[in-house]
Amino acid sequence: MNSPSAPTADPSGAGASGAGASGAGASGPVGRALLPATAEIDSAGRLRVGGVDLVGLADEFGTPLFVYDESHLRARCREAVEAWGDGVAYATKAFLCVAMARLAYEEGMCLDVSTGGELHVALSAGVPAERLVLHGSNKSEEELTAALGVGVGRIVIDSFDEIDRLQRLLAASPVRPKVLARITPGVEVHTHEFVRTGQDDSKFGFGLTSGSAAQAVERLSELDARGVVEFVGIHAHLGSQVFALAPFARAVEVLADFFAPLGLPELVVGGGLGVAYVNGEEAPPMVQWASSVRRACSQAGIHDSVRVTAEPGRAIVATAGITLYRVGTIKDVAGHRIYVSVDGGMSDNPRPVLYGSGYEAFLPREAASARPMPIRLVGKHCESGDVVVAEGYVPDDLVVGDVLATPVTGAYGHSMASNYNKVPRPAVVFVADGEARTVVRRETLDDLVRLDV
Ligand code: LLP
Image (cartoon, rainbow, N blue to C red):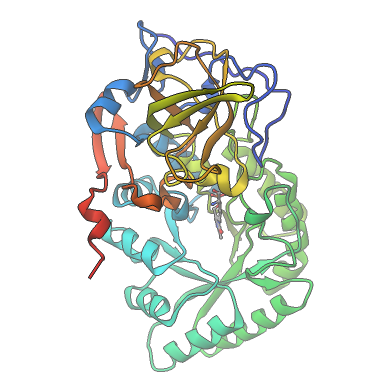
């Protein structure tokens, strides 16, 4: 067994907004850094993850298939807990099912749930309510009631309407929830505008510059004094797929003058740590993210006793996941390009369509081979925009029937999957120690009509 080759340089810098894997180096093998931790190439050149052959997995479980390296997931959770300490929460929106919720809890993480649905899945997994943090920019009365009923660990308050709602619900209740106020610090990050959240012009939280944050703090302090809530901290989330650490430090600096005088015990800097999607990209390790935030905190005069934590989603699950597809057609459109069509597409990975995100494609049956053939990898949906990899490269012996893989699909793929064109959603398998287990079964055709009455 040998390891897949080291990443090749991609001077095109296909980055956070993901222009795709183009430019010199793009046609080398997929970089090791884009593959799950246990990935290895066997003597026949085939890729195994968790000791399991990927082509064999596709044969056994069908395609499209989400494959997660369980020990990679566990290691990332442990790394988060080591870097941030107790209280660090896994942002379940990145990928959630009962098995994932349980895994994150077992590895010592809290779980950030942002809807009643995510709350339900986490509770169904047996995660104790006190390990859950309820988020959401428009929490309904039902969601708040459910969260208060089970006793979630924290509620992150996002609006004055939510304070009103909570106050009403708690009027005749002995429950005294721990709450944080979500603040938008007015710090912009360089990522896709759809996933930027820390700037003033945002639907999220209370603006610092507008004075809303101060008003929210006033109201929550008053509710705390009356014993209605326990006001424990301030939360800020800047955005997602952020490669630079400076904006996080900048946010701490901006928040510090506001936060420090409040004397609150908790500060949460949100999620957002970026991950590499294509050859040549590099993202900072979790521990560096945490230490740079902590350094910024002490420089800004935030007391050591404050619990400073975060809520990573993508950085926990993205690289652990690979999607396996089956190639159905290869169409050489003369004078233009070669279209390779697979049996999934925008229904299992809407990120390229939504954000122009770049991915790599490779053949697990020859994972260390060069990929000299430029292609466009497309799905089976009825629209031209159904692109999985706009500018991909594959080995030139690719044939119909091949299992084709896209790495780094563990975050915001399954969780944003749809039934567009009534395509059943893929199964999810966890692989570890030579075994594969289904954690989410594939949808059936009957599932497609189960809600019709
Ligand atoms: N905390 C809060 C309050 C959030 O809103 C988010 C993500 C996270 C934590 C986790 O962020 P992460 O560590 O995963 O970057 N669908 C988009 C990403 C949307 C992120 C929304 N909020 C994508 O596929 O890129």
